Structure formats: C-alpha cells, structure tokens
Amino acid sequence: MADFDNDHLDEFLAHVGRMKSAGTLTARKHAMVQFDKWLTKNDHTLPGVGTKQIQYFLADLSDEGYAPNSIESYLDG
Image (cartoon, rainbow, N blue to C red; front, side, top):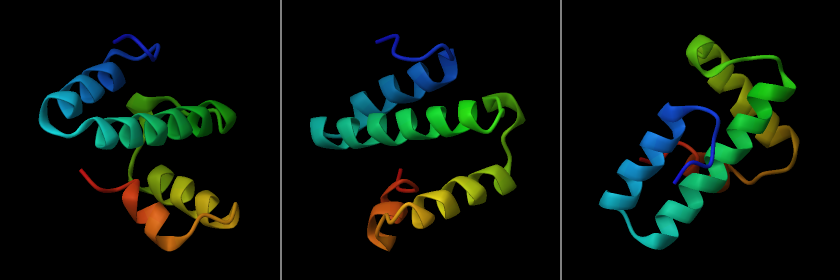
C-alpha cells in the first residue's frame, strides 16, 4: 500500500487497515493525504512536525470552512 513517499505514513495506514473498517481506513487516508499536502505547501517534513504544526494544520482546516466535527475526525484514532 505505498501511497506516500514516507514509509511512516504507509505503515500507519496499514495499521489502521488491520484495526478499523474500510470506511475508517478511507477517512484516515483522506486525512493523511490532506496533511501531507499541507506539509509540502508549508515547507515542512514529517520528521520535523510537532504540536505547533498540527495546530496550524487544524486551524487552516477551520479557515477553509471545515466543520468542527470534521476537524475533530482528523484527530480520531
């Protein structure tokens, strides 16, 4: 399932696929794609991500009009 250039993201999705339903896997993959795009757009790399970058990402989702429940779903494990 190599969807990303980062093995950690692929590994995470493989883990989710073993633990969750197909719908949950699709939702997590969408969230990871959005986050990966945001990282690239904002000149960040996954190894350098901390709490602050995640907060900025979630704030950007809010600024783009995502509903609070949708944003919260990005944090669900």
